[in-house]
Image (cartoon, rainbow, N blue to C red):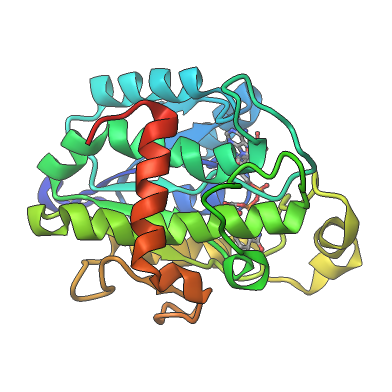
Length: 283
Ligand SMILES: NC(=O)c1ccc[n+]([C@@H]2O[C@H](COP(=O)([O-])OP(=O)(O)OC[C@H]3O[C@@H](n4cnc5c(N)ncnc54)[C@H](OP(=O)(O)O)[C@@H]3O)[C@@H](O)[C@H]2O)c1
């Protein structure tokens, strides 16, 4: 573990940190001497990662329950007077459609809407900290996404890949919208693809993606540390020097090609308004 001067130490909150890319990123951040807050869903898995990371700062929340996200935000506000990076990393590709207790489709909620809510509930802390919001998106946004503001939940035409692609595209648009609205106040936001990484990803998806990630294919994929390092690059990087706020990056840490819809300003604004309305947020 590196010992950093207090002025150099960042506070980084990572969701989806109980496994895969998030867990690997937490380990790397802690080894580099930063303050890491580990957020997972399962109590046992999250505790185990926190122990490995060497922190007692861990919380659990099931993003399929927005009240869990609200409670998580309260706990983070109580324990973190500053947050230098909020990494919205929780997510995956899931079977469906599944209606959550909040009335939204699970993939849309877990991959996108819950992170949108968490970010808003921490917005004043992030602004005060001149922090960054780092969204783990995916090439899936380009491969499968086709966002329709009138069909964000896909209850009647659900397909795992389309739902995933839409949610990951929404995360890219959310980063752009945050930059447009709050960039002048010092908040930065970015979305990135971590690479095709051997994790638990798609273990609940069925079909080709589950087969690709959870059988022989995974032996040819890089280990979680590689995806974690990409997340760490954005969490610790200085916006304006290491990356440009509001943009989407590929796993080579370069501005990436994504779905053309990501540049549609009317869609970016429409998604923001719909999301605020769905969550009963003002602004
Ligand atoms: N692996 C890839 O090739 C790849 C490629 C592109 C993008 N991504 C993205 O990278 C991020 C991390 O995924 P990963 O590959 O590391 O997969 P992973 O090993 O399955 O980790 C996913 C993390 O998200 C958490 N999560 C899942 N459902 C949740 C819920 N309802 N509430 C709260 N947390 C929940 C998981 O918690 P549990 O431990 O409880 O399951 C876990 O901590 C995801 O956003 C994924 O879409 C991955």
